[in-house]
Length: 114
Image (cartoon, rainbow, N blue to C red):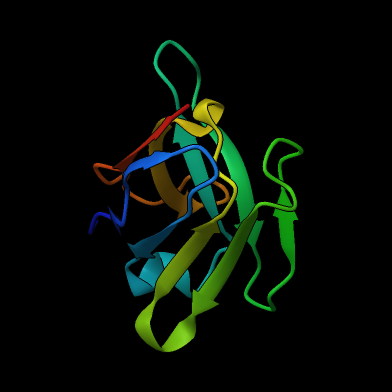
C-alpha cells in the first residue's frame, strides 16, 4: 500500500501560522473520511481535524477556531491551515483515513516556541 506523504511543517513562534499538506493514495482518499492527527512526545496519537468527502468537518476542542481542514479532490490532497499556533501544538502531524486504514507516512514536525 502506498504511504501518505505529509509536508509543510516547521518552526514558528506562538501566534504564527503554518499550512500542512498531505497527498493520499486514491484508494484511501476516495473512499474514506480523512483526518489530521498529531503525536507529541510521550503522548498518544490523536485526531485533531477530520473531513468527509462532502466537506463536513469536525475539530478537537483544542484546535477549533484556529485550524481549518480542507480537500483538493483533483489532487488527492488534504490541507490543514493552522493559525494562532500555541506551544502546546508542538507535535509530529500525520494524515490518514479516519479509520486509520491507510499506510502511515513519516509525518511533518511542527514546533511552536513561546
